[in-house]
Amino acid sequence: MKKLMSLFIIAGVAFACTDDDIRSEHVLDNGPKIVGFSKSFETVSYFTDEGDVTLDFPIDLIGLGTGETLSSAIDVNYEIDVANTTAVEGTEYDFVDTTGKVTIPAGGNFATLPIVVHTGSLNPTQKTELVVKLTSATNNTVVGEQYKTFKVIFVGCQSQLAGSYTVVITRSDSPAVVTWTDEDITMTSVNNFKSKRSGNYQIGVLQGTNGYHFVDICGEITVPQMQLNEVYSNILRPDPANNGLDGEVTGPNNFYTKYQIGFTSNTVWRGFTCTYTRNL
Image 1 (cartoon, rainbow, N blue to C red):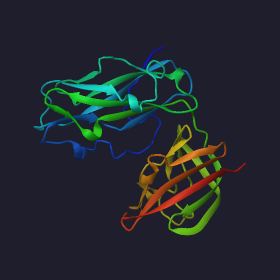
Image 2: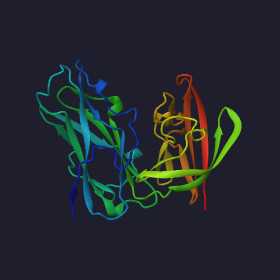
Image 3: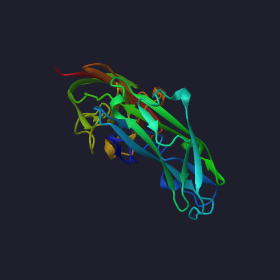
Image 4: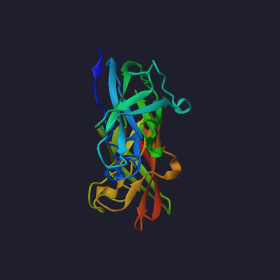
């Protein structure tokens, strides 16, 4: 049975916005017409066969040269980035329209790229990815360089990391090691989790909401950027050296994360490595 759904936010991921998100200050009153994806990726998670589900992914009109409404339609052309795509067309997904083109109508400010997800065919042990690249647009319109690529991450594996752990925390600028035996990992939504503590700070030392968010997709962990304890100006962020892999699940009862916290107005960064062992 075919279902129709519109997906304009990251499915099941309270992942916070990435630097690639289009914010209000990107909307231009002057300059060329620009189109692009409003997000750099979305995660699509299904763990049972729900049949074919159609999801719509937006392509936005970011800037108009005159600041006025769009007077005539814009065709936006796209292609699959074959070199970086691991999902298989016809297995995990299919395009609703195979022309390789979507249209932003006159007077509109976005188009949608509909994709059929074959929920019963997602890989149950590892993620697969469809990478779509915008190639050109009509009507004197350019594709924004930083907004031209979009990744659909198909997830058929459901994380089971929630529970009680012993955590060993090391800080990059200190030989001291801190161990907590009562570290709780809470699931906030599917494959999304929050720790009990941030950094090596004891509960009660910092104000705000303790802990940091992270996402486990088939054993690969990412840590989204956030304010420390969600109130401080200090930033808790992924370590750029991690190249998007901020931790791994190393066994049924073990995982680790790596991230940084900014000090001195976020000009000095201290790395933290947290190694978790489930309390059995």
